[in-house]
Image 1 (cartoon, rainbow, N blue to C red):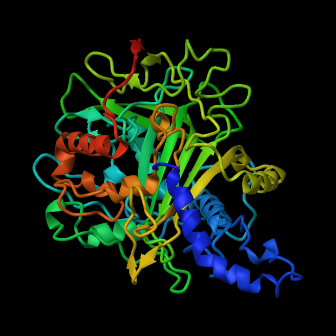
Image 2 (image 1 turned 180 degrees about the horizontal axis):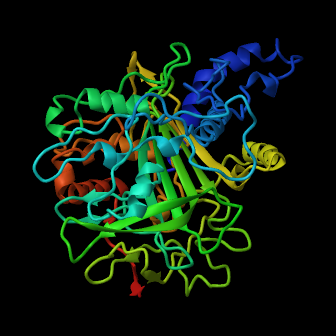
Image 3 (image 1 turned 90 degrees about the vertical axis):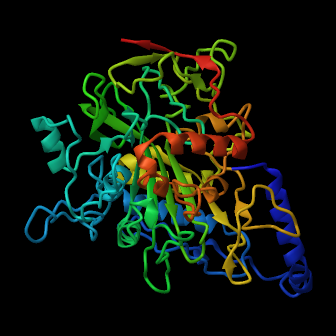
Length: 504
């Protein structure tokens, strides 16, 4: 998310475009009341996933509220209890991506799995090994245990659709699911544990990738254009990608959505095999991207758990530690030999997460958060402890009938898609890009750089396709991506500033 000067550019464009209308109608409408808030769509507290943002007034340039309402609607729908029913003969008879109890209120307390947790994880779609691409199992097929994780617990975990947190670089035999995008550095909580990440896609995106055999990048012959897109007119959903951030909970807490999660990491003694251990983990961040008719550059909605860096016991901040001793948002430096990924190992020092008032991760959706959290608290829902940071959306989605290009810096002559807010970050996913030194993270701009594993074709804002064979079979793609992001962020993201130690 880039420089804040772009917001001023957009404001100028909007002001110039609307000043004539405002001036000519001011006297006629001087006695007319402003449109009431009831004209905006409501927060639904429903299992119905929105097809697109609802824009009831096409002449209204202040659309942030509409997009923030959309964000809460998709957040609550994706976090609705998932169906646990099956249909037809097994084994591929799950009902992935389907909700249950749709006609009932959102349940109190916590539960699992949620709808998005039954979406396909990236590693189950991009399964290529060092020799070839491998077709993924069908949408409703269960997941297989990892090689080496062949215990009874692992099979039970697969049968129960338990999340398995891993991003595997095949040749290197390393687990990458604890490294943040852009900086390739981990976030360390106050207990010395890495935050773990997972990526999932909905059925429309899975079907598009599978139908075109894009799990093998050799099948890409042109720039990717995901279809269909979310549309209120056509009642189509379009592609949805979800990225989640989890932390290991030292003790049960009613303030977190929790799951029993299987963490996998490489077995150093057996090449190609993995060790697995189950942990109770709490959701600390959720990022949702949705390509729609009103936003062909995708809608970017980002949420966090409220105790991440504030409150009486923050997960990633020690209020008693002065800045001189605990520098804010200082990127950790990998120890000699690299991070092992073993969750049993504690890391020190922890990350001191600080979100300043001018940070790109500062919560902007305060008004709607207060309203929704109050309603969720009355319902006794665990989601009262989550907040929308903001929603990034294109103010100029189309130019001459074609999706507008997303620019790092826009001008009045070439304004691009005009993403608003121009800068946005999730504190659990872009920790080292939200200030104080680097404070310019942008979902939309960063993802406009996404290409296939050969860096030949654009992949329509999705980095997932870089995991397709043969990119998934080596670490060359990761190194190339790091170089690309280093250029995008204007600094070497590989450089960490704070030495870390592993405590066994």
